[in-house]
Length: 329
Image 1 (cartoon, rainbow, N blue to C red):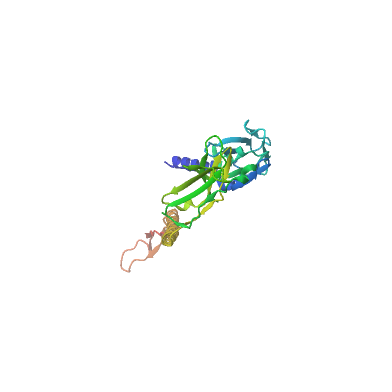
Image 2: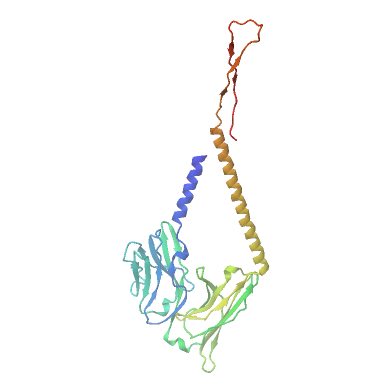
């Protein structure tokens, strides 16, 4: 039974070593970054963790799947760029510093999307929080701004209801509307959303106006963050300024959690103290067993017979032995 326990203990230690890289170890830009068509942009990323064996970049367009842009081994200076991105994308590497910056030249509206810096450690893959790149076209100044609703702080369990209105130029193809959530501690998430669009033909307004609502029931603290409304249309993305969603924790809940935490800490301290006392007692018992040897004490008595009794000798020595067992407590 003991060898099996040792095996599982070693297995757990190996798993901890193999899964040591965390999202927080990846140093990168997050949130939303805006650039103009034709510019050259650098997305910063680095990770100095020793367990990293490979660096990658992924791009996820609105409504699309993540696609690999580049792949580079940690000790290699050259990165393998996918054929789709090879013309305008470049990776700046620094094996010693764990550097893995992505350079995009001659930005195009189609470059808009979520970019993830990814590290590989043995057989585990870890995504960074990601950054959303918004590429503005030259004609975007003629569009109406994205209008998002403001929101008061919510309590845990409340319902979240966000709305936005987006105006864009008319174009062929499907126009998709999304909500993007960004937080400081979690990777960004995209929520596809149903939209209602109408044509704008009156006066100076020409194009399409789309509205969308985002509803979340029974919000939790993890739903907090900044929510951006985005319309993918005409090969570009029309982006909102974002709505900050704050989730307040009820004071009574904080009190109960604090009390529970205090009792947990006290319980751990008591258990630790009892464990220490039990261990000390067992050690004393072990020492007692080691010293549980018999000590023999000898006493010699010299007896003389009373006068009048027959004596073979003048004095007879009788030796009486007494055994006394001593035990150290």
